Length: 313
Image 1 (cartoon, rainbow, N blue to C red):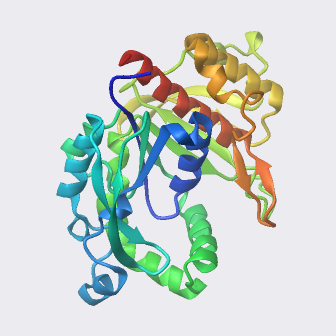
Image 2 (spheres, rainbow, N blue to C red):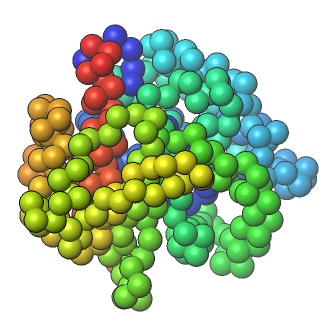
């Protein structure tokens, strides 16, 4: 499809939803065509060393940003790398692995946009910015279930990392093409984390699909659940696409058609009819369920990856 890999960046704080979004997009594009790399692998210190040095994984000094930058440049030109590995289960650094880039490369982690040289390697840059209250819930759920932390331990870690989050993680929002914010509606049912809305800030740094039909309710039935507005983000003018958790399948498919009209072959990759993995998440009781706001977010990001691939054919 291209003469070089197409590289997507997904950056956000710990437990912001990076892995969920990454996994879904990889399923849509076809896992055999996607290389996924987590920038947490470039930690300079293991968990014990970080505790001894009183430094968090969010701090640039705790990461080999120079090596990450070098590897991104190699991947962009289609070259293989010997990538370090950080084991989240035990907090240890392990033996590096040989990575050959496939057609699409997804780089997800904390500090992907920390340097200008790193930012220049991405074709599409996404930043995840859920409300802190929601991120706290997600982090407690993940770290107690998968990483052996107590609730008190997670909350203590969040408090200690807050300064670094504010100084090093959140400012990366300004470099993104799309800012993704999942958030609960005002009438959120307690415990129902599938009914989240999504707010997509669309910066003019890349050409987005023509969503102007959404601005005319008389020509579209989307407006009850999907809205396009003009706003400012970090002082700059942006378009904002809002998708409510109660959006129905007809509204989702109409938005799909808007996207597919721009890239005719998009549908074979990621229409809801053609790909049942869109928007799939694991519910609180372990069942697999579908979120339309998540599906449409995946669809929009996939759109941009395929559009970049077409440019570099």
